[in-house]
Image 1 (cartoon, helix red, strand yellow):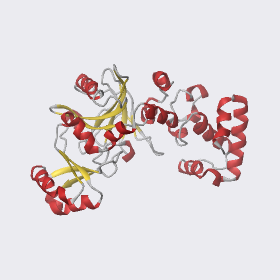
Image 2 (cartoon, helix red, strand yellow):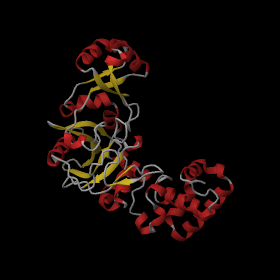
Image 3 (cartoon, helix red, strand yellow):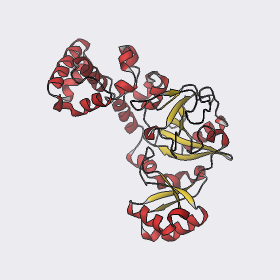
Image 4 (cartoon, helix red, strand yellow):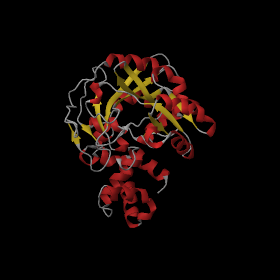
Length: 349
């Protein structure tokens, strides 16, 4: 199926209805024409021979501008067309992200050590980068103070490659050589989070993702959600199985159930499944301090208009974990059970 074909489907509701049905019939008869679509159907245990389901997925992708799996994540099956159109699709949103940044500004966030150098005053902890054997002296000085530390790939995201290293167990030299062999890493002093955040899940550093938009004069907080680790995980990323819950951006109250519903077997919780700590209805402490801090952060790289700030709370206040130049739009829409187009329409147009 060509992009031109689907552009016609999007423009005219009558013709579009017919064209999508025709496309669905063709794809059911020849599943190899869109293998990705049928992988999604299989993953979510749908019927690959259902022309109706295939048409719905095609509508999701080519009319709504979402990725196929968001048909399931957004529960489009149980939503009207009007409700569906309130969701901001990932493809559409990607275009906005590119317009709200530059290649140079995105690189400043994507390289973790570059980001640290720019926002050092907000990290409030020691960070070094190791990329070659020439960095061993600096690494030795770092681990002399920090026997246990976090190592992250220099340009990873979503918690991938994250590990906590204890050099008393692994040895300084062996750990260093291992990091170099893996392509280098950013090594960070461990964050000691406050009790108010640790009580949800003490093993992981539980963070707030707060998204801002800067138009050159005003910083607007767009939305926020809490991320919590589960089980034995040291990370709170939803992509690693962690929980997320929406936050009222004005008050700091957690206003949704927490979920790991980014996957097929997702569940919803008002209390943490490991600690039984109340999530929904809880208020995050020192919330105004966080709002004030992101007002400062958002103007440091002004050409990067849209940023997702990951922030952790310590006894001394909020610290920056990292900034994301391309934060996903899907999580907050899943948590809210509704699209947020109304809030974003002035940015998307």
